[in-house]
Image 1 (cartoon, rainbow, N blue to C red):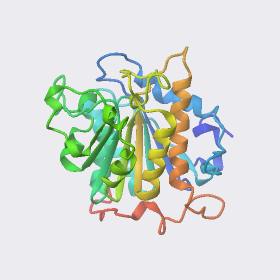
Image 2 (tube, rainbow, N blue to C red):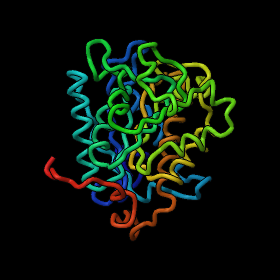
Image 3 (tube, rainbow, N blue to C red):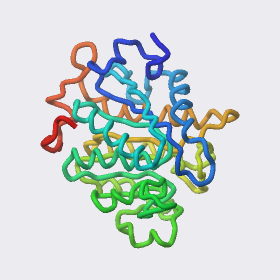
Image 4 (cartoon, rainbow, N blue to C red):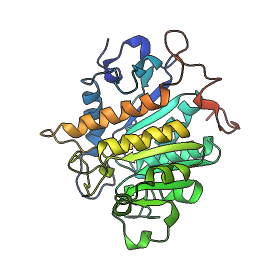
Length: 311
């Protein structure tokens, strides 16, 4: 067992060849506008993961047996545009290897690259954004690759469903589709928001989670905490429904801004990541001791024909 592996899992489950899952860390914090530190998020998340139990009680599973490969971190930080390009390239490369690709940021601008890659590779993609902020500006601070623009491109090119939103600028009003936005103040009185949000998704779904979607009472270590957020079990109930009813093709988690004096947020992020894998893989049979049968599981459902296999 080596500490360089995700969660300290044995080497036999950490190699790329046999792993079903790829985790790409993106320690980037080039465009955040208030509290800095999201570039330290992947390291704090990985440290918490190495101190986390790998048996999931709810699903009665040890999902790491499917193999989780920790890819090299994307360290491009010379400009937001170059970072997005690097994330896009790495994400697309691993999708083409028929892996279940996940990313951990870093600030939310990394999702521009990951969403772009999944949009190019999957037909009729929905992007499920779980977030406190709308992130729908076309441009901010002179760049279209700003964290405030994280899902603008998705709003134009995919079926964007936004959940937990409770902060936005007036210029973002009208950019979003009001029928596909689940505002936090309305969710609190709507007993059926989980079903409505799930029904609004197409078959193939990419999930992007900004940790400020959670209420600061359970996840204070984010760059821009907003009161009135989601709680743990309602979020898991929603995610469990989405994974059960749709084909989740990948996800990213962003905006952990670690505080050395407050470790609970790091562990929430670690548990959330592993929970999502557990929901995805609990019904997928292992192939031999580890790995999966790529012809019969998630990876090729809805996948576009690969015209350019070299890139």
